[in-house]
Amino acid sequence: MEVTAGASGSLKSLHQFVARKGARVAVRFDAAAPSVQTVQTVARDRGRRSEVRYRLISLPLYLVERLPAVLASFRG
Image (cartoon, rainbow, N blue to C red):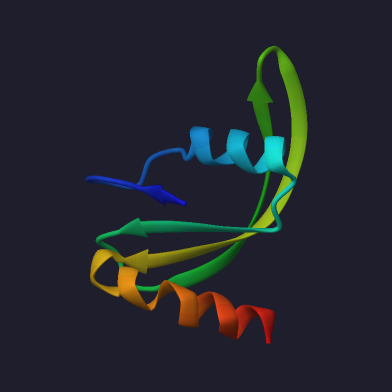
């Protein structure tokens, strides 16, 4: 999970976390409208490059309490 302030950043720390944990889904809270996108990129961490691919769920901050329900809908 990553909480961002201001304009969307490059999400480098989120990419690194996903690469380390092997996560298939990540969540970001920001001020934008809800969205889901597939992210495919190369994460650089501790001198290593790892290709990562995951679904990024972006939610506005006011939906933080609904996160369990949102994640349950993705597990289907």
